[in-house]
Length: 357
Image 1 (cartoon, one colour):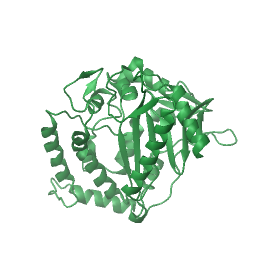
Image 2 (cartoon, rainbow, N blue to C red):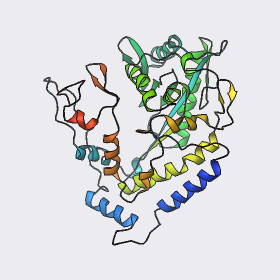
Image 3 (cartoon, rainbow, N blue to C red):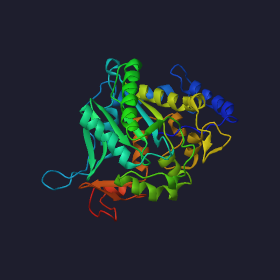
Image 4 (cartoon, rainbow, N blue to C red):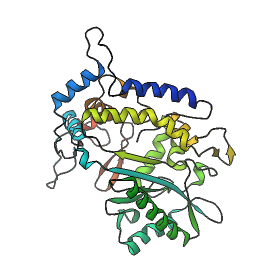
């Protein structure tokens, strides 16, 4: 997901002003005069959309280079396939849905220490055994569960995440989250644990937080410190709420992408609740937001190029394909390829998986 722009109480007004200017720049009705023979932002975007015929959504399978049933490898994924996969997400407004992701910290009600895996196991198993959810396993460990297009999964430090079902209204979203919080809280209380909804752990250091038994998190934990000073804080000491929205065309995606980026400083300021770190008042309103300033600039941050004239499906696909890799999932195992090139992977040139693509 895209990290919010950095905000604290002192810097908010300047950031909000700058981003409101970006909203005006990106507004659908805005037209800038063409300069040096170049089409305006709106004209250039509409021309690309007409060429791509994105207003007629087409189904596309997710690009994959996994092993076939006969043991052979599929062909390398092409740029065109990646672009088409994004384009296939277009849908009519009548099919629009809202998807929410809700994270929270679990903690021991007596010691205030973060929830360990034994309690996590109890809650997930309770959802399976008592409420009919289906378990998600990694080797012998339950690491999540699913039901009715919802899932509950674990962040690296045991933060519980509800990935909600695609729903039509915010009222349905409220009911979904309410049931989730009531049910998981009741299961946690059986082990004298509770949940806390904050953006940043106010008390415990990274080394005090138990790591969940998920293979990819071992890779991330080793790689993150190579890319910034706050990656482990992001993994183990932060929580968030996210929203996933549909789009009907490339133009619609561009407008929503730009507007959501532009509004993030405002949302951060409105809901900031993470001033404390290691038991100390930091002077910031949102330390969760501050973390993203130095987590991994290859894959996080405010994407300024989203506001450029040529932004669209193709440019976003190019961005995704150029982000360094974390891992390749093969035969139930996460293979560490952190920092490697996806293009090299598609060419079969990864030193960890020679010939694989």
